[in-house]
Length: 140
Length: 140
DNA sequence: GCATTTTTTAGAATCATTCTTATTTTAGAA
DNA sequence: TTCTAAAATAAGAATGATTCTAAAAAATGC
Image (cartoon, rainbow over all chains, first blue to last red; front, side, top):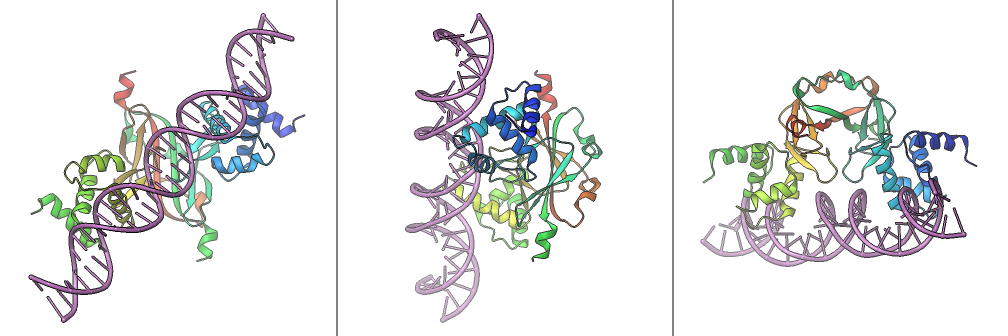
């Protein structure tokens, strides 16, 4: 018997035409509940504690499926590893160069002037800022 | 004897405190003259024709030096490989999902509302859009 | 229950980037 | 010019995230 959170997630997957396997439910739920824009490694490390058979290939496969369905987007904000973000609303991402944490910040993508992109068909908009977060400025 | 373009580039490096070795001059000049936001592979392939001894390690080393000096920035707009861009002014980048080409577009980074980043120290701003370029829309 | 399709798994393969070490080049002093 | 020390370059090995491949397991429909 799934918890309420997990069955809500299962319904979400079903609505998007994705078969709600246990692995997929747990991965999607993990993304929804995480504030940290996890990497594949993060997701795998957290979930394999409770799903010992989990493989990284499944994490990769599932993320691709979720992206395809428009439930998740990938962040290329740092080179080392891609990060994954459940799509909630328009927001930008700030990466702290010292602690590596990724923060969401509100932004209206519509406000960005796209006059220079006449004739281009825009599908995806990413705004990545970086610098120092408040906490890391203190510990200088 | 260096061409006018190359000696201008050499002066630029010198002003930034970078010793203007031939490899560095050529790599910086290649970036300045390229519209394509080249990858390391692109740079290496183009320049090793004329500098047969050139090694990829030198391309990487030089790019890191140029980034450090603030002459170049790295684009993480796609996962496969990083791209390098000489810093000219504020502009965003558009990546065509079909042909892979990267286009610059004018954008005033200052216009982006950063109210959500109170207390953050912003060092770098990247705006990445993607979709279909005009040419690839035609060939649908 | 059985056959077919889908999903998961484990590990091999790929490839951009970094690291290491040796060689070459440069700058400055004598 | 010659010598020495420091800096830059080169070649290839190492790393590690991601993709690929093939086999096992699970789910679906008849």
